[in-house]
Amino acid sequence: MKLSILFIMASVYLAVAGLGFILIPEVFGVGAVPANPSPELVTYLRVFGSPLLGIAILDWMARNEGPSSARNAIVLGNIVGFGIIAALDVWGLLHEARPATKVFVVIHLFFTLAFIVAGRKNWWVSP
Image (cartoon, rainbow, N blue to C red; front, side):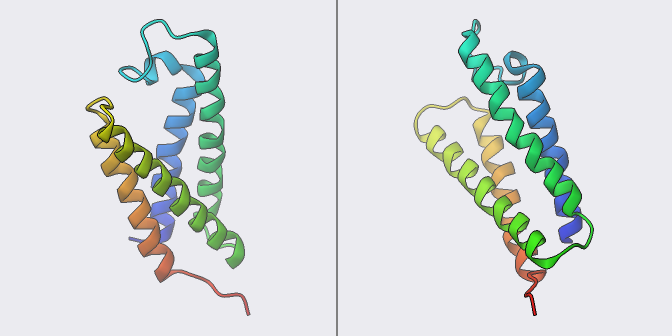
């Protein structure tokens, strides 16, 4: 898969997730968020959505060729971010997470592996 396509896919996914947590956290987290969440939980979910939206913008901006060190950093950041989210999803499955978590394990592992493969093919070395 081309790295530019992967950046676009990841940016759209993260933008939807970030905006969902920021704008409608109770609806977006259905099944994982209690029916009557505390104001503190809603605030936390909104704060949690903000970095996702920021990473979406970084991915969107990186879809075109740019300085090699910047793109390498963004690729590595996506590998770490999606990898940790996938690990947390697996941990959740082992501790009675909601059934929809299985879908997120697949999505997050896909992005992790896709960034590893595409990043290795496109890794830029500064002269």
